[in-house]
Figure 1 (spheres, rainbow, N blue to C red):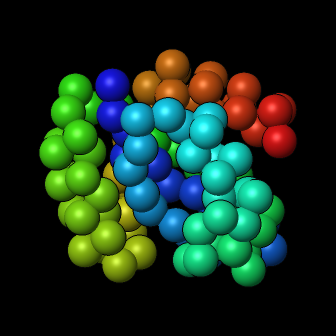
Figure 2: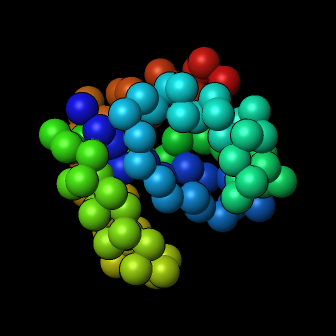
Length: 98
């Protein structure tokens, strides 16, 4: 399983979009400062994610979300992800592990 995820910086409120095959490990990677794009924006929390069967699908969705450049359409995509009860539950679980 692969995931496209959106992180939110608790420092400046900005978002980061990426993809991974392990959400928990990736969140720790970002919060440990290992990613130059998010290093100075820590701490970060998982805002939402969407699961895919293949890495290619996850990467394509990541590119699509990045093409939205924020705005109302990105907010709509995020709200659609969070309507999935499993997504919302895992997001809450990962917030508790930080």
